[in-house]
Length: 220
Image 1: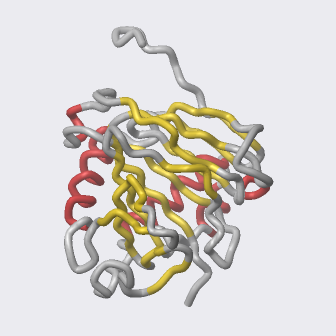
Image 2: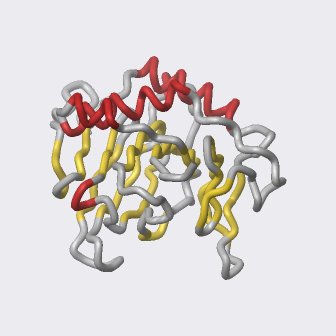
């Protein structure tokens, strides 16, 4: 990439209801979220490697806000960590989610109607990956909001029928927004690669990738 004259990265609809908005977060917003993520990753329900039902361990580390996700359900306590109550979802992230949906879909009403109540914050080191999966443990089909900070990655966005092709590989860089809902809400997606040393030191993350995903669970 030419650092002096980088090519513009326009907003793009990857699939119906799936929109990539490059550079959506400012450097200051990214730095502020990194600082907050450090706070959120500590106790009472700290960041951990999720253990899958078959005994395997996810390579990403995750901390949850609002609702705790463990395969494959939500709970109000960190049932697979220390059973501590999960910290509430801060208004900062609710407001950010509403703005994200409104901007991605270019529809202020859609943004105003969006009310996330859970966040999964994933940290990828350089060796971490995320296999193809669907986000389908929620009881409503509201959009998923994904924010990227730090090192770039390949985000593989597929179809709703299988983990295989057809899929589209999208390079997500620090500050990028990706929203998927509507016809693409249950598309399989994953992260097959993270690119070391591609993030900016200005965001306060010395290495790796932070991914903040916001969702509405439909739970009371």
